[in-house]
Amino acid sequence: MTKTYPKAWLLILTVGLGILLNPLNSSMISVALTQMQRDFSLTFADASWLISIFYLASAAGQPVMGKLSDMFGAKRLFLIGLILVGVSCSLAPFSPNYGFLLGCRALQAIGSSTLFPSGMSMIRSHITEKQARAISIVTIFSSTSAAFGPTIGGFLVAGWDWPAIFVINFPVIIAAILLAIFILPKDGEVNFEWKRIDFVGIMLFIISILGLILFLLSFTEKTRWWALMLFLVAGVIFYAFEKRRAEPFIDVVSLKKNINVTSVYLQFMLINFVYYNYFFGLPTLLQQVRGYSEEHAGLIMLALAGCSVLVTPLAGRMIDRNGSKLAMVIGSVILLIGTGLLLTYNENSLLIWLIMIMIVLGISNGFTNISAQTALYEHVDEEDTGAASGLFQTSRYLGSILSGSFLGMAFTGHLDDAHFHIVAIVSFVFCFVVAFISWKLPGKIKKPKQLR
Image (tube, rainbow, N blue to C red; front, side, top):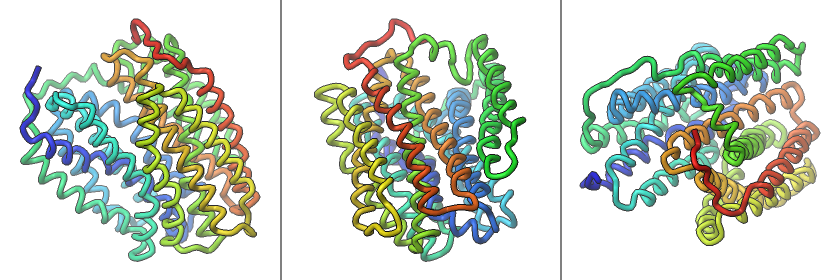
């Protein structure tokens, strides 16, 4: 076994700084969307593409970057990722039009999605002692930055307008680049193999998801039935193609064989759909309907984020003692309760009532995130952990994409309490599905003999 890297804590810090950029930039924009709508004269459906394009680029980019990391070297890809994020953040504040800003968001997503697989590869390869602890510390960087993104974004937009959510990345990027150059272990020789990258599968995946997004957003205008057909046809071709490929973009054969793992992915996708309905929907409601400033909206969102971070260690201890199922069921039930309580929130409700509801939702988030990830590892073999983790992230991105499209459909032209309650009702239905999956998953660790 390789000896543990002598500067392990600096390696963990460097990787952590890089990895936090993707979740931070995915959530900071939630409070900035209102100001971007005004500056670019957008409907909410138009603005929702800033959410969808980021997650779509991340979903397509992260598996590819994982393979490129193996071929070109993890350190090289890590530095390239940081540079791409830096370029996107340099250009975005000067966007002459909305299309240019969308391109910057896509580049930012591709760059930041490079950092997770390359960073985790270095940790797995060079930290052999207390590796699980190292991974958990890096996970804290990711989860904390995502949770506090709306609050950070609120203060930045209130003080310096929306370009500040891009500029704030530079201290992190510069620190990570300097540390990466001097701290990260050197790479070996480049060994590039084109055939290992499933370009056809990636394009079919993107076309299918774009078709779904276009179809959902068209409900506010004239329904694009051709987009639904594009989604279905591209999806069927994608499934048939991936089934026959040796190194597929998404291993559909494994998903079909291991129902427990597929259930976890589905559940996590729905959990993220529900949470991002609130993560992006609530700041918009608070600013455009309730009249709160970006700063105050960010502070209100802190109730959800803070409780999520505080509860996660407690949920982790419960999982250590009893396995993932109990924590998953508890989190699902609390999510159902919190979503039900949102249906009671209206223009006559006190702010303290909304904060109490968000505390409930934050508690559920602390349980569901960690229990879903633990449940995944309970049902896959150790050698399949990397591939399973990649698909786990993809399920997160798909849930976020669906949320952005759904909010665009629900809020365009009619953002008020009634339409926010429609969002809550749809989320409430999906909460029942999440709770049902939690109840149906086996309580004992039950690993298959072979995932692939």
